[in-house]
Length: 189
Image (cartoon, rainbow, N blue to C red; front, top):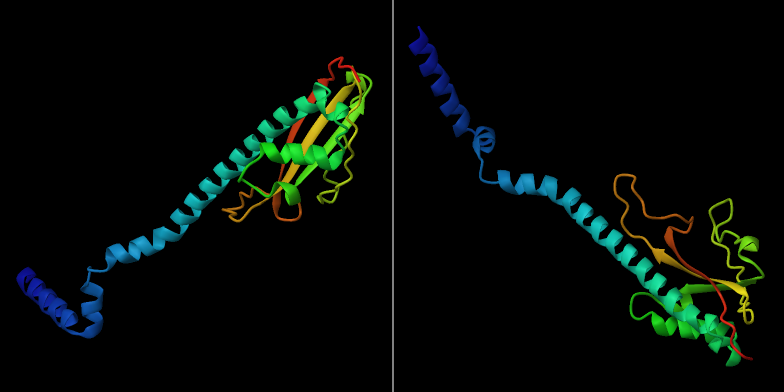
């Protein structure tokens, strides 16, 4: 009895294999391509998200380096004795940043002077609705003054993966910030 059932099952299998639908079910040639098609999109999205995250962190480090080197112009009195205004100082900042982003049209510079470290209060560049506000000043101070130099850049974000998003401003960008706080040296005017 078992033999008869087995023979009937094989015969049914062969008949199914001979029909077009049956042959399609039995084909295994394209299985790897279909599996790759299912996995490729999430894999590529993950790779692009990792690359974008790395680039954003690299851009943040470039901004940190620029604020550290350009704030020395104020700390040593070079910017004050050479009568730098906000535009001239921004040009000095942009000379420190090369090729990563559009410095002239994208970097915002905020330089504020204080009389003591305890009086330092910095307003947030993002309002309560999550919008970026450009209300920055240029006050390099004089010898012995406390100065805070801040640089901001709105970096565009392209990849959002599974709810993980690098944006922190309503405009769909990542606000990068770099800050340097110091006391001006006692340079001579």
